[in-house]
Image 1 (cartoon, helix red, strand yellow):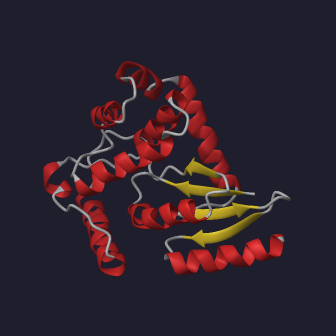
Image 2: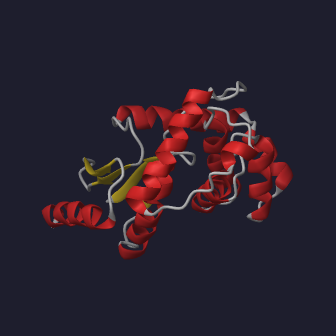
Length: 206
């Protein structure tokens, strides 16, 4: 068995779901964990339209009220937002290529930079600095971020997300021993809901 988590580092509901993922990893540390980049928005250098900025900003405030998740709303004044999350997805893949097991740290670094420090993970400079802060080699990471290999891996992630029907994020599944995908949480859920669903599936597997 293994967990399959489809997400995007710049998905605000995935940021709210991060404590649940941490608790899941700690409580069920014997079950392997695979993370798939879902890719919310493709590459774009165009400024984010004002109506979309307003919609996402409103979503942040709703998540705050519903879950208690913290956001730094100065992002909307300090940055020039773009509707582009693929660079952040590539950064996670690039980090894992350079150092196995570092994808989780890169995801969390991107989330903290974006949601708490009002930095823009659509910008390559932000991602490269985060990688260096994590102890990754700056030159190697930069080369990987723009490499054809990383792009091919991202496309593999996107195809897998589409094949299993993970159209919204976060999407968390349990892949059973007979290769069935059991949905644990499609969209945000709290820990109680996630654990209840998971335990039901685990009982079926015994």
